[in-house]
Amino acid sequence: MKKNTRECVRKAEKDLLAAKELAGADCPFHDQICNFCQQSAEKYLKGFLVEIAVAFKRTHDLEEILDLALPHDKSLAGLRRGLVFLADFAVDYRYPGENATSRQAKASLRWAERVRTEIRKRLKLSS
Image (cartoon, rainbow, N blue to C red; front, side):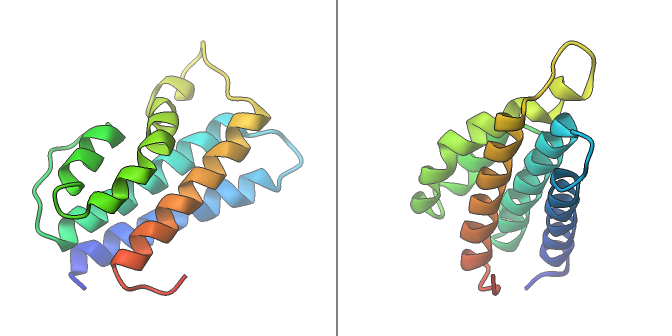
């Protein structure tokens, strides 16, 4: 595995771990959980692109990132619905005006875990 891929995976894992830690806290951190889940999914997808040598620009647009990966692995299309869901949490929920719910936080964790599972499988990493 390429060094930059490993770095993407490491950061993705830390984002997901942070989201899980916050989910177990006494205080509701729904916005932060959703943002960390979006970030984890983004870094996993970018790590996959790095590994298969597909260039990408700096973006938080998960659909755009997915579209770069699909010509190389069409089976990733099943992630689109979850990535669309996670996309809003990249920026909007970090600022006043938007507040994530408990339900959104739980769904974010499920989608981030699914992205993790699918990308780790393709990178031949253990669960």
